[in-house]
Image 1: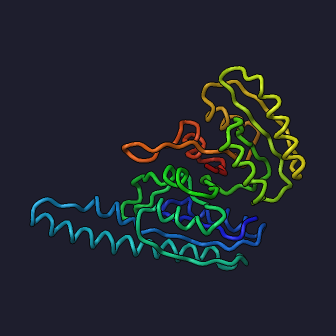
Image 2: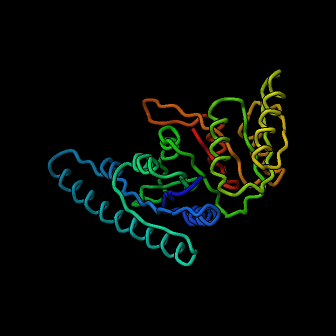
Image 3: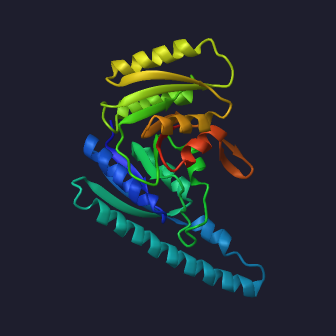
Length: 279
């Protein structure tokens, strides 16, 4: 069940697409949409540091200018979000917050059911082309699922479940079944990509097929042999005209921040097919 959807807004064009997906889900589920813009104070701080007394003065002025510029851009994003949602018939609210983007998103997801965001977020509004590490931080810390949208809106009819028998992928399937963000009239392909023979694959896929069928989904199974699991899933999704990939996420935290596994990175960064992710 979905009652609250959080849309993370950024300057890239996929924010509009994220809003369109959120509207469709809200119409299907009766949920309310929250549009969130974040003033990235940490990046502003690190981009305007000075050394000596004179440079510190100019750094402070730069910080003030960047903050004002970013706040103005955040308000612009909120205004655009309101314009897109008005007339859709769905309930919505808007909020501007300050802090580290992934931390603000993670905090807000404690009281939302689903996060919707673009595949290539740039939350440093003062420099909209600068990439941030928001997706990895969100996947690693959030308690709820995320829908990463492509560059163009697609009607969700065909779904691929990237299943590997691990708990993260099983949790993703359970949450998707519980939430049914696009209804249950979907064609579902449970896909298992293996780099070596696994005698338990057939049993796992059959159990997953029965589970999904009992929940009203038209289901089939597919097995592929490939060492590059992420690309294999993307290629199969394109070949079968799938509109959505469901997957668990694998992340880690190191000295330089949060990192996605190779498969999670490939899936979440593709720009053609939406990805429903749960950690």
